[in-house]
Length: 252
Image (cartoon, rainbow, N blue to C red):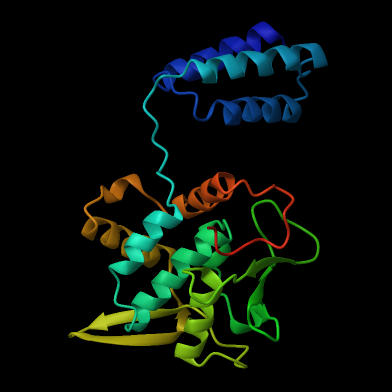
């Protein structure tokens, strides 16, 4: 395999994608895996460097419209929650999940995995909570890790405050086997809690987009991943250093 051959493949891939370089690095990774599987000699170190430079130039010159969802920052979450009736259990749960996804910069797969009370370890003051993470996209093996969330002020709109409020509302304290975010069913004008099934990712996104529509925004411009992007955006705007620990749950 040569530099010229790899670049010819990547250029054809980008052309076939209408000029978009969104998945060009995945295409390069797939080509490398194919070569390895079929015992085809891969690039030299010098050629790998040249390809990486060429890929960056392709990406810098990509003028195709972005299809990425918009970041859901704390400002937007505040507007969304102000439209919600937090006296209703399902609305309070959705608001809690909004804040949890944002403050922890979580991927939705990390939240919608049948989380139980035992997965949340609270400090005695209940101002800090640790979420048990068995597996994540970047933690595939080894012992579980914990994501730490710290509530800064009870008056703030943050995940720890709302999560504590949710535990109180559903009387979850000490009931280690219970699902923290159960499914809600609607039938004949009546809403019921199904404690045997977890609230789904699809229900979460539908609830999000419904509230966005009430706010007058294009709901299709947002997705569940926007909370992770919004959390990272707010942390960057607040100039929080990357190694900061514990992770602040309320960004001011």
